[in-house]
Length: 110
Image (cartoon, rainbow, N blue to C red; front, side):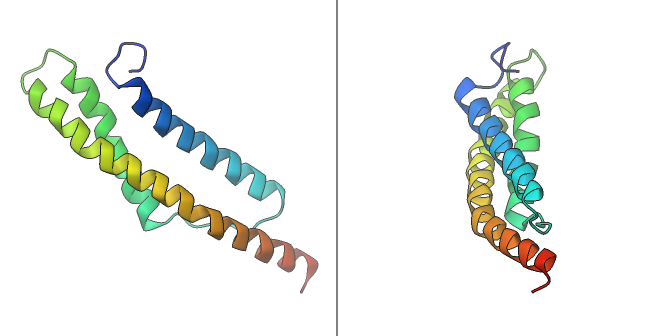
């Protein structure tokens, strides 16, 4: 979708960067002994919106009937979805630090 231009490069980069940062943070937290972190409602909501946005971008650039509808729907889901996903990602920072403290404390038996 990035290669054929269906999805704007800046949007795809912002979504991909967020996923890479969350993935790397999860691996680091696990490696340092943090307890498991549950996915938040905001994280699920952002992902849900993005899962609608990407196919809508693709359909909006196609030759199907209803193309204009999908082009508009893509942005309706994309902008809030990306903002919510980043907001949720920022919310995982204090939760990750708490999980790290609790995981280490549990390992040390205190």
